[in-house]
Amino acid sequence: MADRKKRRALEPGHHRKFLVVVDDSPEFEVALFFAARVAMRTKGRLVMLYVEEPLKLGGWMHIKVDAPDFPQKQAEAKIAEFTRNLEKLGLKGLRTETVFRSGDKAEEILKSIRNDEDIAVLVLGASVSSAGPGPLVSSLVGGDRAGTFPIPIYVVPGGLTHEEIAGLA
Image 1 (tube, rainbow, N blue to C red):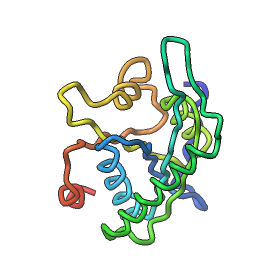
Image 2: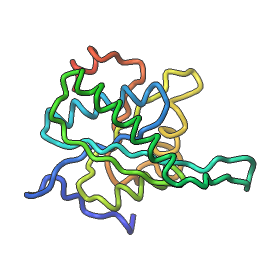
Image 3: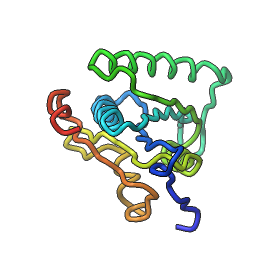
Image 4: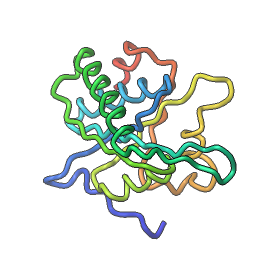
């Protein structure tokens, strides 16, 4: 991949970062807790990426909200709640960063990785649905991106409990 940058996460003055994509799926919270535990244990950082995707009405029609701060305010409230929940689960002192983007989720994930040489791992949660692991996991792990993604992707089973994750991460 021509635009692949060297990762600097382990160099002096840098920090290994674990990227989690914030959404409303049940498996997100599993991925978040796993990533937070690993980041805390390895003295890394947790990056929470929130991507506002345009509403799709049909093949080519999209709606863009005309109140640019509204989605970000909603995302900030969600992320604050998730951060409080992590603290309640014993992850106080975890260093976190929040990134807000607008556009196609997969493309914005790649842009975030390209823009931050310290992001070393993407952590995703797999859906427990019989329909498959979920659209984000499928789009990033399979297809034309398979084998070319610039960093490792951890796919955490969405059905794991906090206790099971604590035994793994």
